[in-house]
Image 1 (tube, rainbow, N blue to C red):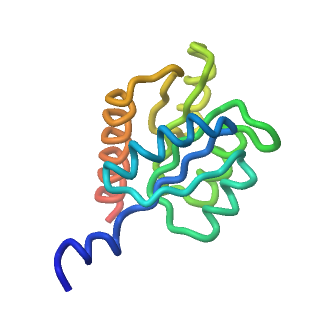
Image 2 (cartoon, rainbow, N blue to C red; image 1 turned 60 degrees about the vertical axis):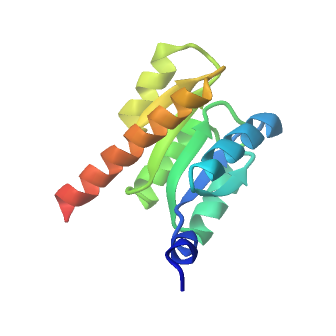
Length: 138
């Protein structure tokens, strides 16, 4: 088996949760190009179902969604999958929303509209924080 083939088998899962299909597509394209296997969900309930089926490394989640919103999803991820890195996305340039998400356990946040390089930088930081936490626990 070639090294490339084996790395494909272990590419980490990224779950993108947003009720806007166009935004999900942009993020899926970006994260795939960075080596992730992408899963998509339109709301927190769909996201939880995906998390139950896959070992997800990273979640990029909108805050404002129907059914289960980003805050509810984040709280549930922290409770059930504490090692999953979460970056929240908010359309509102609202510092309180972001601070509240960070207090609940998000690794970072992005505000819409965002630049792809900013998404990459935040993802790298979130995964590094996750790695350090896991290493420290080890």
